[in-house]
Image (cartoon, rainbow, N blue to C red; front, side, top):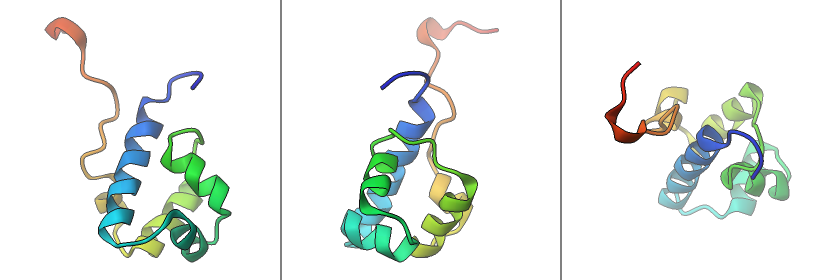
Length: 85
């Protein structure tokens, strides 16, 4: 995966977790959110930089708030060696 994908991967893991808790397949969630299944799969794998509009659709389809959708998603990887800026 080229470029800085940490946040996309973390977000995808969170989507996967919520989707599985709800007992939904990728195909079913994609349909509920009005997305193509291959696009949704790429979002969940961290391969796509999803728009805020599509994030809103996913939150609605999963019946969670935006804050719940991002709960536990780290913005950046932990720093190595405890270095401080």
